[in-house]
Image (cartoon, rainbow over all chains, first blue to last red; front, side, top):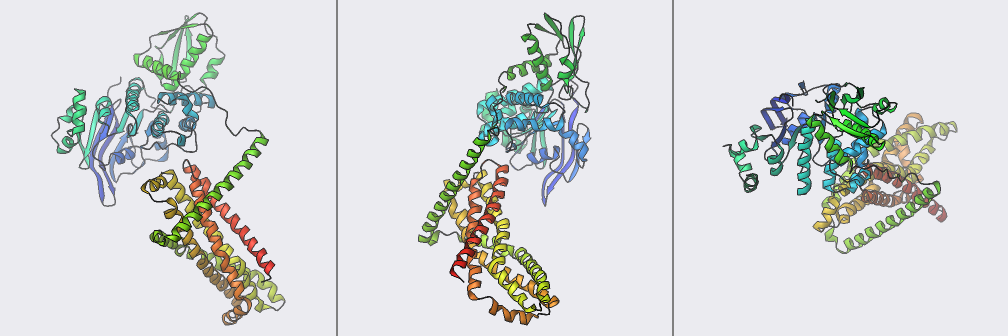
Length: 257
Length: 377
């Protein structure tokens, strides 16, 4: 493994919607090869922070550097170069409804590589299998799949370009426990063999314990705790105590020993 | 390990002293044209020693290509031995090999490759099915209508008034402007000819009669079909996709009560009024041109209108519009409920809705004209 250097560096970030201040003086550094989860109560701006890193929402002030490059106010060419190194799994999948699953996975490949159609189809089929979908799903349209299968198809599309940086917005929401476990396992496997950096927003306490290296706990408009789960449970902060010390948090913690 | 730049050393295989070395980046960027580079190569027979010491990078796409090559070798009767692969690369190769077995390999033929005869039959049956489901929809509307008339308390007044506001009041500027311009154009075009014969005053007959009997009802209906009918389809269609229609059903609200009837009633009330407004605006347009170009004053123009436009003509013109309104509302809602799947389908049905509504309005208009001709009015 390469020495840990930072992939994402957020400094003094401020986000504001009208009079509502979502983030203020927010700082966060994410290292290469780490799996980092953003957690916190509903409405604390986790998804907004994710959207700002992937350049879908523009912050009011501050700086976000990804791979050492400033993304706030970047131009189209730079943002395209960055985009091909990102894989994003949206909360509801966001698959293109007019395309089959194979075509959906092939979209980024067609856009960003010069490979021939057969190779692209073979790669798309592999990604579909990697995401844990049965082979016959490749020819289906998103409307014909269940919620859990749509999630996995969306993951296959996010992995299409073998990204360096994978963003997952609520990856296990809506998945059955077996699929959620398989997803956790897959993320760990890919991280080890591809050196992926993963940033995820999740409420799933099981995957927080299982896959994350560090957890950024968001509250009071900033990151109030940034540590491994074990360290985070020792935190005195009332918000963190409330989140992790509730009956669900304690049950998972006990199970993890 | 990660490909930080846009360029990568092309993936290839070197042969040295009977051993094969993977070189370059076996990644998405590096494997471009890989099969061309490898196709003409001769591989040693017997056992192949495949070394990973000189590979720059490997990702899932590169692993897939490498494994395909290895499968090819094995099928040709060779055995493959892996030497000196970094543990993370071995893991990746194992992962890809394992998942590749479950990946799809067969292609099902797409349904668009039917023979022409089959396609004609398919299309014809489609039309029949379409007509049948439209009929079923009409029946359902009638049933809901009767049920509502028996219990007027179930009318959703709020939705009705919201529809009147959106389909009627908000459409006034566009209807007014467009009919005004058509009035101007007709007066302008006809005026030339009339002044040539010294029959300036007949400009009133030309503008008022054609507008009141035919053009204003038709134009207004077409504008409303494009503006409101499409909105109906898009709204109901999106609600269908996001399961809001099903949510209504489970709450115990019949979707027709809130989504269809207020639109139908609202448009039937509003379209005659819009048409009336359109008539007035087009006559105003004609009047302006008449006074500027043909020396027919406003007073003269207005005085002649009652002599030209009989009450029957007026009632005929306005009387058609509730039928047009019903066509637009029913087609718009019907197409909305036909939406299935996602964004793509919403777009397709919205187009269908506008085309079909305009088509049916023009047919209905022709039907009215023939009927009136028969009665000699």
